[in-house]
Length: 595
Image (cartoon, rainbow, N blue to C red; front, top):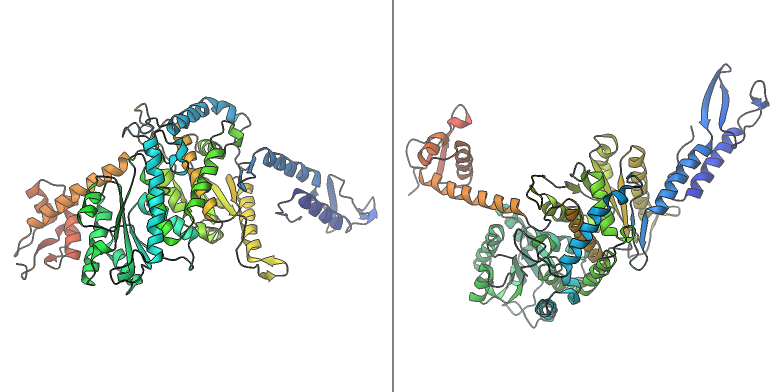
């Protein structure tokens, strides 16, 4: 059997095949009657050898057939490999098996998507359900802002962020004990945390002037774990509270928990606190009333999941000492490339089209994100929100029920080769993969772990090998490359996906900029919290009541009441539960010590 070569270079593949064929041919002898003493040459289509003297078996089909297959892939690669030389960025869609006429058939949708993006850039109402402009592209190129007022607001916010961060680093703005701030605690959820988390993990180092911690949930145990990590450093911690509306309960809860902890440590919370919120929001008013250190705006025309280049992301970046100018310039550079109307040269449109092709325009296949770089480990999580919150919609723009969306998951390579890549290759084919490669292995000197081989060579080999193995099993993939994981390229990568999401929304005729399902979940949670208060009020000392009995008394769903009672019993020491034969028979009451 001729082993496969997974070399990137086609010439090396063919040389490997030729050499293997030559060596195998030398095993045979020349007698034409017995197939002995006659070496067969690699120019033949079939070599036949005698096995156990009487059995003839085909052991090799001529290398021309393999040459033709490899040559076909090489030609497809050249046709569908996009390289932005000035950015060092590349996109390879050659391993997606779309037909040659796919772009032509999609042209009406493509034209509509380009038209919609042009209108969005110029300030049209691109979010019709909320009647808002969508302006995250203006954040990295203020010349595009539709009004002088918006342009000035963006520029002044960036200037204020830089000045504030410089004052923090220099000690001009110090903690109440007179010492410099050393830590940042960012309190937010969704886009108000995911973007800063991803950027911090991708770009941060021990050399940064400040490190950063996050409250990104309303999990009390999570709050405690973060405070434990911060140990005795609370006195030198700057708290950044991020909420556009100021009414997000998870963020409010985290802020209130932090206020309590600061008070317990004898610290004045307002002398440590900064707000990033909408002008005039509840949080803005609260911060002003309590004389917080600073307030920065969240613009009405920026959604949470596309807010990382606003004060939401730029303030924590600046405090960490990361390059916000390079970050914005990288995004603007990618924006410039992805405004072209030439589909074959527009990486964002190509991505959107591949998503459409893979899922038949209905999200039939999942998007698996595999970045081969530890610094990009949080990218799948970030893209999960950006893609799924944007594209997961019940209705299209015409009001028709379409249930659109693309499921996104992933982690990092090559770690995932020891996890779910097994299923990707051999299991259900309900996905397409996006490999993300970082060309530069490391900033420090290379270390050879074998003769002429580094750990980075292995990482590159695992990416290319996995890509080949998946393709052999009929699994499709996209591969993109960036030169290194720095602020410029991370900005470009985020900008690429933001525009691809916008294009895909147009291709399938949905509003990619609202999130009605999220709002529905918030309303349901509020209703259940009110129910919990009602349930708590029905408990008394003495004989207990079952969930069904309490539900009848307040005209509520027994299952909702059951779960509220279980939660109360597990967390309120004043509530007692007497277990019945079945969970539904459990009886709940107030403990005798309750007053």
